[in-house]
Image 1 (cartoon, rainbow, N blue to C red):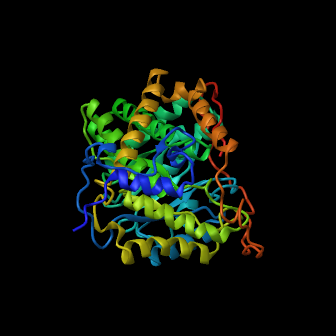
Image 2 (cartoon, helix red, strand yellow; image 1 turned 180 degrees about the horizontal axis):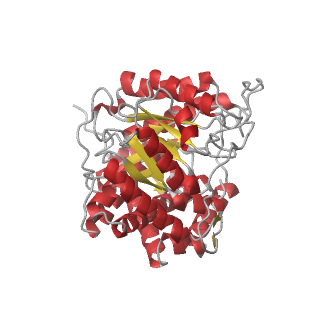
Image 3 (cartoon, rainbow, N blue to C red; image 1 turned 45 degrees about the vertical axis):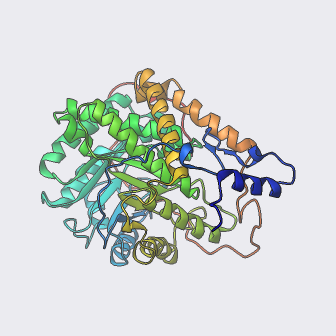
Length: 456
């Protein structure tokens, strides 16, 4: 019987194929400094991380979540209902009273039109509303009709709005306090609701790497938890009402490792606060990974992102549509987005195992490296005085810029964009025709806060 191949045997075989090149040429470094080796062995990885993930529901291992942003509330309602009837478990409504980047809603009546026919006790619904978050939360609460069984996602997140815009209408600290007070008030009526969304996606979409995305999300979560405790919640209850939101892209091993690292960072942070609480993670597909020249290739990117998020243990997954770079999604594009997740869930059985990457040397090594880098970014933000001060002094923007510039200096090839572009005509899409509606002002008393914007 032949002896088992050793690591040296494999390396010798690889060396012959390199035709004189050094083996180190196969080692890859990501723009934010993560080292990815061509071969991993047991000695290269730490002990398998215990993420505390239990068995998943075999019928619905994660929440298939969709988002609508059509400026017309009636059309947005039709999209939401079609998604829920087509296999989605929950939905998000992006609110923008101007209609430029979301549904033109400016009142409880407007949101009610977008939710017509949706049973909130059965289908969780959330809102993304930026600085209008408190008003939108009250509109959503009105739609819930005080039913304690309503599964509402208020998604209060003034920090992401501040980071993306580079300014806030009034002091950002006042927005943080107002959001926490609203969350504490609404939690009494809706005990099943989630209150805050602690997102790192602004750092990702601005060009940042995984480390600063993780650090920014963790620092945002801590700021929200502190605000909720000042509003009257216990630390454990505050963390339990916060959802982490991270991006998923076509680098699926890194997506898996990033989501696993997020759970390790969350466990360490909540443990240090004396309130150990399991993390709830929502993964949304990266917008910056999508190609605009040959959008058909985005179907593959989105499917890979969905796989990475599912294998990484995301509790909810939101996939964009392959036509997003061109305009508003078509009904076909929305169906493809839903079906990609349904195939991963029901035919590929990606959710059949709680943590399918556990024990894989490469993934465990990447998880450990990202957890350490993300924790270091979180500590740097806290050392600057917290996430608000880190945004205002430019620390977060500087970290994002470093990674963005490194990637711009050596951009990776993109099929359908920088290589092998298709000559076929792009699919026809509807362009947004914003029609603004009246809405309450998000301005709070006091001077505006300013920070370097994390422009997508």
